[in-house]
Image (cartoon, rainbow, N blue to C red; front, side, top):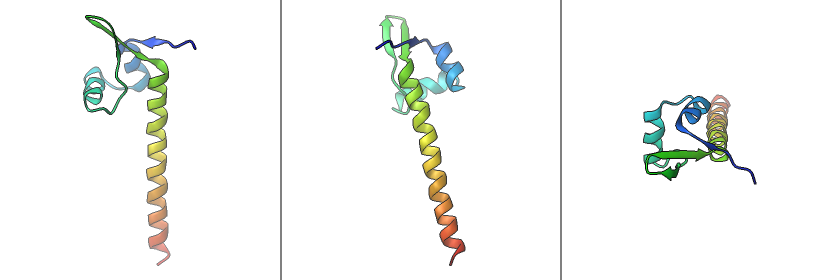
Length: 77
């Protein structure tokens, strides 16, 4: 398996999130944790970032579907 490691600038570009928000989300277990490469260097596994993005899309879609079902149920009453 060929995994690519992403530094913070690439993670920011892929997600559209700012550095401070990424680290805040990591601290609150809402974002993948980086790997320590050395005393002052960290990187994220690229596949972890893409899985996180996919999970956010799935969450959005499931919430939208639930809201649509509630609205449809309310309209039928």
